[in-house]
Image (cartoon, rainbow, N blue to C red; front, top):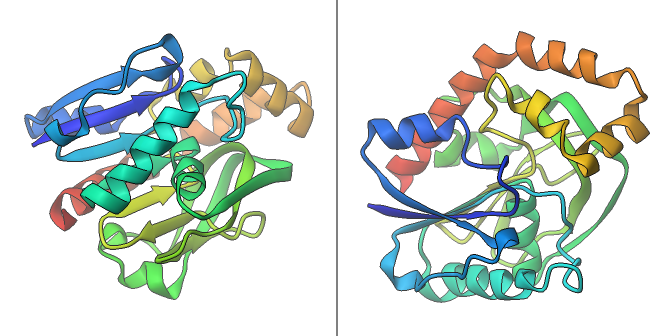
Length: 236
């Protein structure tokens, strides 16, 4: 298997999921789109993962490469019909690349929060053996407010109705982060856009509380990450 990963900032990589890729001997290439890396020939890859980032799906003037990225995602999902996993921005890009829509979420959803599987999520292969309610790391100010055609919502939260979805049979995405590692919150807090969103939403003293909450939930994050990875691999 050969995996292609779209990244939008160096610190938002597959994180915890890298460990499982290494264990399985999966060959994967990361394309750092914000650094000008070109999108390679898609036909050479078996699966596509699209990670998070500080930009919004509509920021095409500041980040013109978003146009080509969305075209690639559209071709991947609708023409090639190969497996897709999107996280945070990758969730929003999947909707925006198709016929869905994204809009601002006010206030942003930041912190360790509960997400709940829908009835469809409880029977979807991506969530096999996973708890129907789980703690998840959130750090976003955009939501998918219109899901694409041929999609089903798999998880939700009180603040955001589409926390996870499946499009067709092989494309999954989550608004929350499943790749969390011990240093994730501290590292992301050094990104100016992320730190400002944190402060604006939760106040100047929010970071220590968020770090403590993430640390308390690391074991659960790791368990859910491992299960989701294995479920994805089995499903495809």
